[in-house]
Amino acid sequence: ADLASIVEWQLDFCSRPIFDDRGKRMWELIICDAKRQLEFARFYPSNVINSTTLKNAIAEVIETFDLPRPTRVRYFRSQVKTIISKACGELGIQVTSSQRCTALVRWLQERYDQVYRQHPGFQENAPSILSMGVSVPKEVPPNYRGEKWAFVQLSFQALQEEIKLVEKGSNFGEVSLDMLTELPSPDTLIPGVAVASSRDLALAAWTNSLELASLSVDKKNSALVLSSGASRQWFYSYYKKSKQADEEADLWESAKKAAGGLHFLAIQPSLESNSCSGLWILYDFPAPPV
Image 1 (cartoon, rainbow, N blue to C red):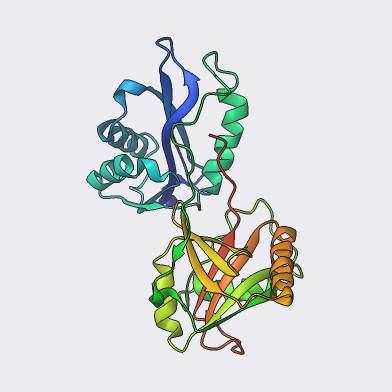
Image 2 (cartoon, rainbow, N blue to C red):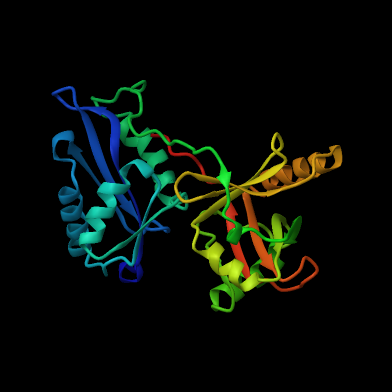
């Protein structure tokens, strides 16, 4: 594995449903990259949980594996923001709260069955101390909102052409497909949302500052809900309630399910435009088991 090329980490530092001899919860630090070439896991007693312990462990991982200092560490639990931010900040590492920690969550799912369940101190029904809370949606700030929008579909082949433009730096966006265990066939239709704006470049730049995760339909409020960061929810756009509009929304959600949760957001100068100024590959990210 070419560990020298790993510059982004995914990290979780949290209690587990495992209790030590004192009846206290064990904590665990796990670190990996998107392709899981790097994997590090270590348990800690609850009385050493602080930013210094975490900082020392991160420094040790860098030294032991002979890694470059990561440019960014993603984490998905907003409750441990302070401890992670302090530890990484003292090492000059940028942190991002994000649901884009698929490799980490999948590894957690494996560890739950293969490691935690096998541990003599495992307690299946132990309540989670740091459960994954999802926030109530707020109105998205006006500078993140376009003028028009539409449900759209693109073949995966056509989507890949747009992805290349982002990878070349021609457009704004986040187009990693690392969350997929296998790529769709070229003719698979991928659902998305196209947003049109006369200030498309500015809107794309603003949108790029959000760590986007997914879009979903909220039929009760006739709204599109944008999920970002670790747990933020935004009312992104609205539609006029009608039977036809609700049916269209249902079809879009069904198409998303058929694509395995894969979808996208495109920002364009107009809905008729063949080019986009920003493209974000979105995904219905799995919830962690603990």
